[in-house]
Amino acid sequence: MTRYQQFDIAQLLEGIPQAAMLLDLSCRIVAANRQLAALTGHVEVVGLHGELVLRSNIGNHRGQLYQRVLDSGESLTVNGDMINAARQRLPIRTTITVVKTRTGKTAGLLVIVEDRSTAGAAESIDLLPSTTPELIGYSPKMQVVFQLIPLLAQTDASVMITGETGTGKDKVAEMIHRKSARAPFPFIKVNCGALPPGLLESELFGHVKGAFTGASRNKPGVFELAHQGTLFLTEIGDMPLPLQVKLLSVLDDREFVPVGGEQKIEVDVRIIAATHRPLREKMQHATFREDLFYRLHVLHLHLPPLREREEDVRYLLDHFLDKSSRALGRPLSGFTPEAMQLLLDYPYPGNIRELQNIVEYTVNICRKKRIPVDALPPYLFEPIPPPPAREEMKSPRVEGESTGETAAGAWSAGESWGEIERQMVVDSLKAQHGNRTKTAAALGWGRMKLWRKMKQYGLI
Image (cartoon, rainbow, N blue to C red; front, side):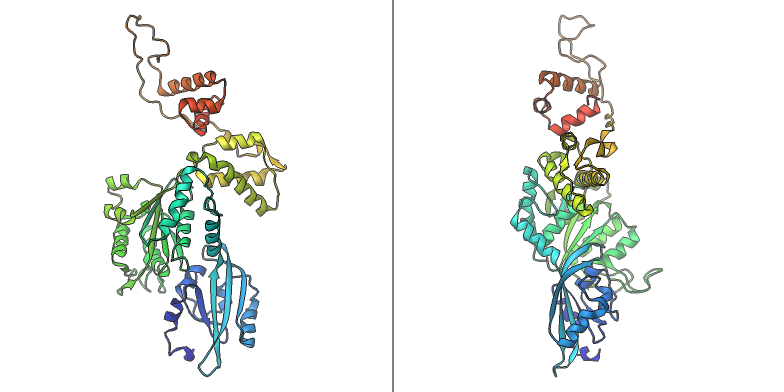
């Protein structure tokens, strides 16, 4: 390792936009950059064999590729897959190059790992802006989302993504990162509601050895690991107030102090936050800081729920059916008309995540070529509980009529809003001879809303 001591190797590796590590002649790691730590999840890697840190299928069993490059002196580029820090399989391109001294003597290897999923997603977005492997949308509201993504990617301003659970906020955040100039650098996601306050602070800002019981080593936080990249803070509305103060300070000063530390660390990180909670209401109840809200809410992108994207449901069903059937090696030709109609009419309160789960369930259960109604999840056929009855509406009286009668078409005294609305649906269905499309249009509703109301009032 003495050959490397005349240079600041760690600083040199930080200048490489991909994950990189420097190995000695025994293929053990001398230094690695933050990108490697973010990609693999391994932070303290010095002294470990490079093959143990980079878990891939590139054919490097027992360091065979490393040794081949050391013996031949020629660089080698290999494509393959690896398991990243989130235990996901990623396509990668690994380049192994010999490092030599000034006298020409071999000193070790430089290994650079490129995440190819980033390049593939960017190409998909450019080729077909209405759909990507992560997000499908042909409806007008989703077209607005696709048009905004490239615009949001051109700036470093903070972005707030709102939308119900399961609408794909994490996918959109990653797409913004991949279309931005920060794409070569890490994209790290942190769920602010998944950890208790103490652990969340350590996860965000890191800690020094001895900062608390169990802190046996220095640990960098995600702010440090995401340097020059993007940090995605999902469920930001669940972040405790004390951490909101510290986060605001980091956003303003671009520096922080690790838990238990004294020395400040400067960072250059873009923040994308997401929430399904009404932050303005939380501000009114003093559970979310107003200054942090406006610091994060520079740019805003709202993802519509699936019930407002009726045009996209069929495309999503076909997409996830193809994906699930391929994964299980069970080719299916589609849904029966009855099953497809039921799935098109269902409101999907869990949005895209629920739709995907429904399709995966049917693929696992179905033993036929086409998926019938009885292969769908049983809960789809359970009645939706009616909403609480509203205040009773008194019927208007027509002058000249007796007190015991009402005008034609008027509401009876004592009827609840649920009873009134049910009768409206029944009358409209009769007027349209049972045609649901025309009935929905006559009531000013969408087809999904009509189906929900019919199911709620026992008309299905």
